[in-house]
Length: 419
Image 1 (tube, rainbow, N blue to C red):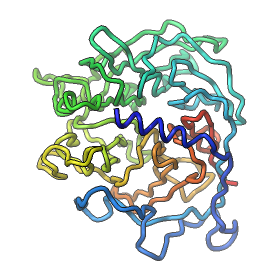
Image 2 (image 1 turned 180 degrees about the vertical axis):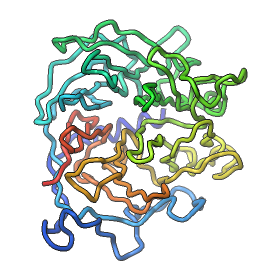
Image 3 (image 1 turned 60 degrees about the vertical axis):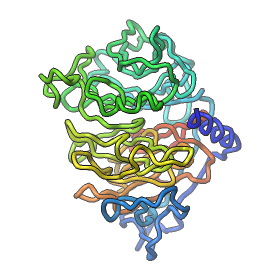
Image 4 (image 1 turned 90 degrees about the horizontal axis):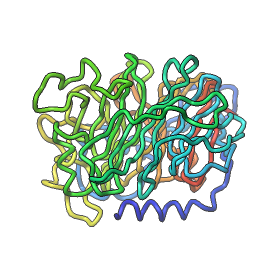
């Protein structure tokens, strides 16, 4: 239960947060103006100056502790609502409003000016203990016609708890979800309240990408490597909960056909690259070793065989190795940890220097990390946003207006945009 207890501690520390941050001291004209590239420090120091937990060496240059960059455009991060109840997931509706999940099992709709609706009920019961609850959410590509939403939640069963996927129709009056149906359960169930994963997105083929965790305990960790278990995986399923056609293990008797990639720990970050269309994910390491990965079908991402982190009590995980043939390296990792939750790529034009940058919510680190990524999928710079807010940032999305919107465990909704 160490992870959960640390999360509670950081949540308590977040109680005195302030609501507004303005970034950059650059002017809006001339060098460093809004159309100028990011300003990079002349030193070789990255944003992370704390001592790492391990003496592990990265597999390649730039895999961790990359150089610091600073946004040149003057921007602002402002809390526009403070009355959410432990929000977990956020997505944008076609009319520009924001659909938000709350941990205990309700949804809300918020405007981009901060007006928050009454709770929306009708979803199946969630097990909100520990790291469980109503988790990630996405809408059907044809939402304007069918009003269908899809979400991930922690489900309690006779055999234990598991990560489940459900769908339902948002009622016309937006007071409830109608015809809610569980379409997929990531088995086996296990009696733990940790590491559910929980992000969900539609891919360009109209199928769902869903992330799961390996449920944390030593007994379930090896299942991240098992192709006969749905734990510690990135999954690809249809809107009926069936394995999507064309998955990498389709037709194999020794593998579940819904598996898209495996060897993951606890995936709470998921996004599509706006140019390449590649799936990117972020996952928690143990003590050190939080990762960003570019997901390729059928690949093994190593947990718990390889990792750049160690156990919370100090010993090395497993064999204490960071590389092995047949296992993928993370694009980037953190040590000390970020505790990565929701993430999104920026595609707006409000702050041009942010184009195609990746924004990742940090829980224990209490900031949003901005990663600059080059055309070869290498991280070339990192910036910390809203680090003075004392908030555990849980999820982030881009609005129809081009601004970024983020929710925090303490119930705040932030708007991040050009000032």
